[in-house]
Image (cartoon, one colour):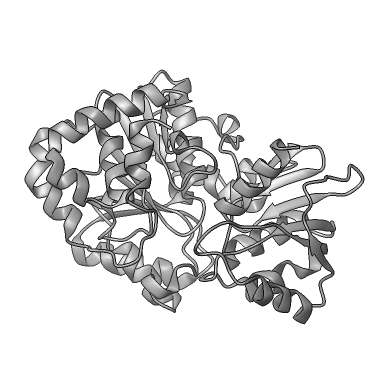
Length: 379
């Protein structure tokens, strides 16, 4: 492990006790030390990473010097920093870290949180790019990615997640996230009409330009693939709309990709992994599988609504195999077992063995996907 990884891990990844004024203070003091590329920011509940990578992948094919900052990662921190078609190497990250530490000084380097430091490292790393796509963490006007000048804001579907921080209704969550709206915003297809209403109200009050993805892109049907899910078509449509707004002459045929690991990714003929962890993602997965039955490899963080998620997934789950999760935020195993029993879902423990005669779905968050991949690679 290099010094950058050790430094970042020393900060801890938890997002409790967020100081919403810290990063704006930092940027106010240090902005003149950075050269920022043109930025497309992405906020929302689900689909941020996929939308960003689809757009970045397209820009790369057009010869644009392009970067994509996403979070969280599955196996390596490098996954968060995609630059001109590839993840940033350990050497690039270490060099950027050393320059950044000197540029902002020890006081700020030590004070910034894990996500804040990773975010400003991305700006340092991407300084020579034509365009950087920056994915928000929890989203909203206080997100670290929201301090930078932004050419375009993309909003993916907004739904329930992180209610203890963002609010316990769609209205509150939407208000919190949509406060980040800036001069030009493109809104993906939404399940909740109130999101459109709130976005339009903010746009009117601030005299902002607001598009729906369908205003700039073909119908969703043009982005469907035989093996894909409806939610991926929504992500592709939003990415296409952004490319159209940026006058990059996009073609719908070039947007039928899913280049980011862990987004209903088929890693074997009978194994798919998805890093989704909320009810909205579970509904999308259930729709994608239709009448197909799967063996679900699952676990959850304690702050996720695993009871609702398991209820949603029940129609497609033949049995559930619980996978160990070595994380401070992991849910109590007994509570997960109780939720499975309440839904009358057959259960067992994941041993690392994959039966070639069964269809597997690994679901429950980035840490669950990470645990599965490590268990699979260890065999």
